[in-house]
Each structure stands twice: as C-alpha cells, then as structure tokens.
Length: 375
Image 1 (cartoon, rainbow, N blue to C red):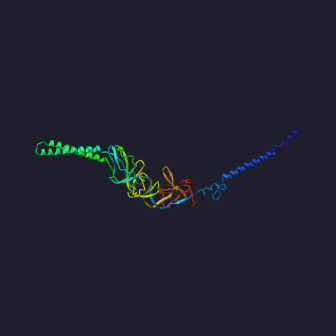
Image 2 (image 1 turned 90 degrees about the vertical axis):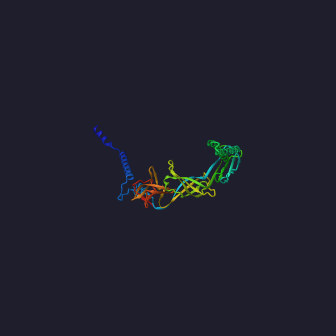
Image 3 (image 1 turned 60 degrees about the vertical axis):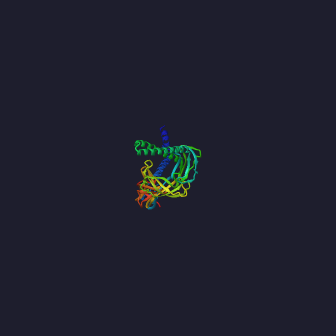
C-alpha cells in the first residue's frame, strides 16, 4: 500500500511546461515595453549634448533649443510728417434769407441756384400801410416845424417862457424820430443780398404771406470754401497757419491743395482734438459745402525717422512693445509710436539705429529666450 502511494507521487509533475513558456513570454513582453518607453520618451544625451534618435525629432522645431526668427535692421529713413483725418466742407459765408416784417410778397427776384451781387433786390413785402404812415408823419412833421419856428420867434421877443418853447421843440424831435422808425420799417420790406453769392432753393411765390423768421431761401459764398477738420491734441504744437493740406473729395477721389488759415485756441476736452480750418480757392466750384472729405495735413518732413513693420509691434494695456535680438537672446522694449500707415509705424522712443528688431515669431518668444536669426 505504501509502495503504491510513493509511485503515484513521483509520477505527478509540480509545474506543467505550458505554464513555464507563458510566463517567459509575458516577462519578455514587459521588458520589451520598458525598453521601448525608455528609448522613445527618455533618450539619453550623447557626448555632443544632443538627444538620441527620438530626441532629435522632438528638438527639430527649435534649432538646438533656439527659436528661429527673422529680424529687421532699424535704420533712419525720410518721412513726411502727415496727419490723416476727415473733415467737412463749409461755405465761406452762408446765411438764411428771412423776412423781418409780416406781409405778403409783392415781388420775387430769386433765381434758384444762380449767383447774385451784394445789394441786389431779392423780394419785397407789401408796405402800403408803412408808406401811408410815412405820409401822415410827414404832415405832422411839417406842423411841428411851423410851431417850433413860431415859438422860437416868441421866445426871442420874450413873449413865452423857455419851458413852453422846449415843449414844442420836443414834439418836433419826437416826430422826426418816428419818421426815421417808419423809414427803417419800410427798408425792411425790400430784402437785398447781404453779400455776393449763390442762391439756394425756395418755396415762396408772389402772394405768399410771410412772418418774421420765415425762411425764404439761402445765400452762400462758395469761392473760396473752408475745410473744417480736427487733429489729435499731440499735434497741437506742430500745427501752424499756412501748413499745406491735401483734401480728397470722397465722391470723386480728386485731390485739392488748401492751406491752414485758422486754428482753434482751445483743445476739445471731450475728444482731445484741436479744431483746424483750411481755405481752398474753389475757383471752378469743385467742392460743395457739406461734402465729406479726407484730409492729409503736412507738418513737415524729417530724414531721421525710425520706421518699422506694423507686425513687429505688440499692443498691450500699458502701450506698445517690440522684441529685439541682444546677445543671441530676445529682449523686450517699450516703445512710443508716431505716424503710422498700413505697413509701417514710426517709433519716436524705445529704439535706436542698428537695433535688430524681431519681425517674425514674436508670439513664440519671450524675454530672455535664445533665438536663431534666419535670413
């Protein structure tokens, strides 16, 4: 019985061959995965300081840890100091023609859109009542003049007192003043052009009843015309009477040359702008009052302006920033800007001639980063 049990124990294996092979395969797989991860994600640096095969691909976008950039050499250039803005055309003189008295229009000499001369009669108001009052006043005036002469004779002979004569003389003086008032009222019935110009449109006709303040037409002098515009307050000390102005008509895109003739002494505290006016001869009636125009105010020229590409300037909350290359590294600079166009911006402070300005890749660099300058 014991012999049979011993034989059964000796013939039963402790571990099957299939399990041993499976364990070896799993171990090899784990070791291979660890080796792959190590060489793929943790390459060992070689003697030259470069990474292994996997590390070379990771560092391909930055040449040896340096960000590739292109630079713009800052140099002095010629620049015309021009302020670009917009403005409006104004008539040299413009007035609304109105009646100062009430009445019907008895004659109308208004040819719409046509020029008139200073003093030319435009229309008349019915003044029959005023003329009748003038005739009556003329009779009164004659009566008071005769009375004054008789009273003066009596005063010389001392038949009357000086007080009696003064009362009569006062009546005469009052009558003369009333006559002058009536003549002034009669003059208002004949409305004339206050200056030479061009008449506007009208809806009045003969027989129209008008009151004081009723608009009859307009009169404008459009040779020359004024160009009204505003410039930022930082240019207030640079603007001078006589500065040339290029005016571009928005409708026709034609350009006209004008000159500054008046400058507002005060800066607008709301818009922080300075109001300026230029004068243009408008000999051929090219510009019409009320037109919208573009204005280029020329404030002189300089040969030492520093202009850089617009894409190199970064606006921020405190102003403007640029990056320059200094000893192979990116260095940030705060700058102040002046005139600008679509492609160039003038730098008035913060850069110097000879600086290497970073113009590309500025969003990938920060102050202190090493950069690789590319041509």
